[in-house]
Length: 188
Image 1 (cartoon, rainbow, N blue to C red):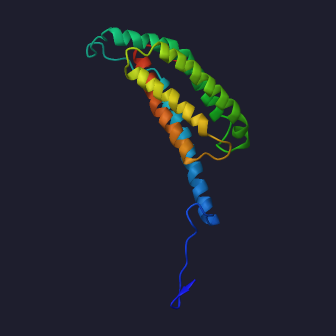
Image 2: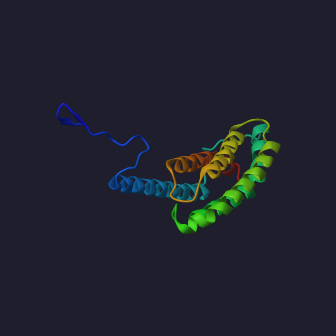
Image 3: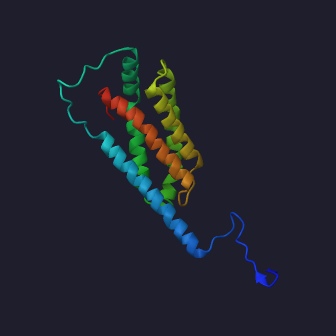
């Protein structure tokens, strides 16, 4: 298009095709971001599942047993097998390959249905142990919700920034039940 002897060029509209070089950079960025998220998940799980160092007996005040601590301990015991099952399933899925690989795409439908089943069963345990409301119940609810949201939107092919964000958010929420239950002596 020419305006008074000058040529004016318009960029493609939002959502239009990107030049090949920008698609390659964008693809590499997505792969890098997903790889970093997977690595962060693995490191976080490994770091959080290690035995904490023994606390100095003289410096640590006794842990008071009260209604919330008792309720947390009971809930931790109830969810421990479910959380281990979820860890094993998630790690097996991550071990199938890179996001978008044929192996991971083939494993995705089973991961989705198994995660939905896990979320249903975990929600039942949470509902039965939700009173009084407390940090453990809120963070466990958030984790269950995050996993359901992740599997509701994930599709075969390379991951999206939304998949990565949902997965990362679930890792943050997972830290609540893990830290609280470990502090109460319940491991998975």
